[in-house]
Amino acid sequence: MFKFLHAADVHLDSPLRGLENYEGAPVDEIRGATRRAFENLVSLALEEEVAFVLLAGDLFDGDWKDYNTGLYFVKCMTRLRKAGIPVFMVLGNHDAANQMTKTLRFPENVTLFSSRTPETVFLENYNVSIHGISYLSRVVSKNLASDFPPRDPHSFNIGVLHTCLNGREGHEFYAPCSVDDLVSKGYDYWALGHVHLEEQVCKDPWIVFPGCLQGRHIRESGPKSAALVSVDNGEICAVQQRHVDVLRWRLCRLDLARCQTIDEVFDQARNILQEELDKAEGRTLAIRLILAGKCAIHDELISTREFLAEELRSIAVDLGNIWLEKILFQSQRMVDFNELVGEENPLGELLNMVARVDNTQHDLYEWIPDVAKLKNKLPASFFDVERSLFPDSREQMDEFHNDVREILLSKLLAGKEKP
Image (cartoon, rainbow, N blue to C red):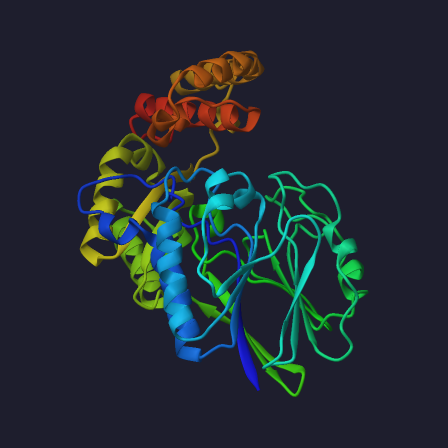
């Protein structure tokens, strides 16, 4: 019996984006999260005494600027070399985009598969044949799976491939292939990369996306892991997802329907954040908090939301190990003001005026090209904070318009919901 680890999409030293910097936020816990997650992977390999480690692409990020990232990787691989653990890896689209990746000298226990044609490495001690191919360039539209050799009938066969399969939402359509393409090769296990969400595509044979090691933004929320595979008598007896992330992203919704006062909002927020913290197993949390639902305090929430946001951040700091990545106010009034449009009273006249503005909202779309040109002239770092001020799509423009509308109504009405 032997075990091996399958990981992918490490994106070593890739910065975590979208995090607001405020007093008391756990900056030290955030910085270097991808490195510490990779250290957890190496430690897991040593603890489990695995036979080998597979890295299925995008170990590095496309824009690493110097050799410090590469030297750090070499240092981690040296720990595995001293334990006699070999590593087999392929280049993914992000790896191939950086020339430094191609010139980095790997330790002797690291095998990098060719980008010209699939290669096969045979491990005599375990009777395992590992087949793999790297990306030659960032964009690979060819079906690389079709070039893999047929299985070696006398050994346990593994394929290592960076692919989108037949497509996955949010991922570039690189090295596309079908499940049938992979099954037809007769391999026992396909170690895939490129898709950041963990997915066991098939179990006969095993076709696995382990997901990324460390979430880097809110779209990569939830636990992140590597696959620990156990093989006995030439057959897979277990595939376990082992969590190695150090920072966990979560999307939390606070239902305002039960809140009659602002203090009740704070109490409910504290309870939700504490529940998430209890489930995080000691990890730091990056949480996007959404305040939503019909409630009697809608106008008060909107008109004082800057104060509320600071108080909510204070609660997070008090609980510890929580970073509020963003706070979204999506509450609704108990009264539907649309029903009052046209009423012959001051409130009705005001709402009728707002409705006329809403009807001209399509005119805002004409600004989108101009906004896009402006954004291209500004430094990228500016948008880490000010992105919301520059909507450049219909959806963002609608959200921006509705947000301004609610703020103006709340201030004009001063919390009164009846004519």
